[in-house]
Length: 250
Image (cartoon, rainbow, N blue to C red; front, side, top):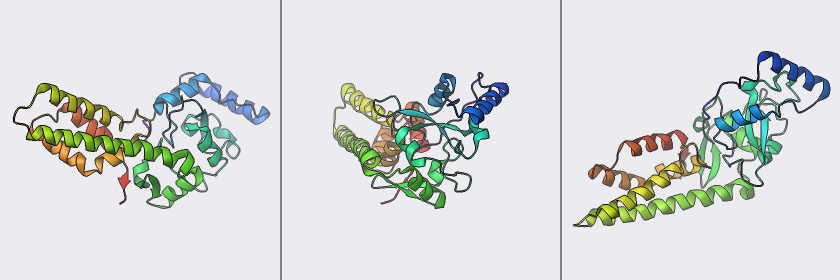
């Protein structure tokens, strides 16, 4: 889970339209929030991911839904209130159900920074406080089959790739003759790996967290700095990794 970059309300959702849709929902119970312009803006906001699990919503079997952070059954006046809407995966939405987020608050990644409330331990979420713990429980984020196995698969692969790059780079450091081809091959692999921990990528918090907390990351950075290869692009990528990363508990 990462902090979302909040986007403005779609221009189509004017105050008049929102009021009309709210009145319709109260009268008929129709799914008035199912508008393409709402879904598209929410998907842009989350880079096409579930705002809680970070799975890509465009993949087969991972159905996208519009989530009402404060449940519409309890707070019908917020059924199309822009600040109350989020993009969510079907499984997470079912788990959350009609949980009263005003009575028992959980993380809202549009307005809350998850890293204040959550950490990772062996690819499972751990709550830093009551809000973090309640978020994990309400959203079922540590379900092994649905989420933990996938986080392990992606995170472990990233760490193994980082280790391979570290070994290649240390071999490069020992070479008397350092070829451009060898250097560029290592840098290409590293850039591609870092992009997997940026906000656009699936499960970016997992990748970023475990990369930044690995000893090989420090080794790689030091060698690249030594040869003036840690350039502006790597600086920007590091900032994005830091934005996405949670603390990792050993």
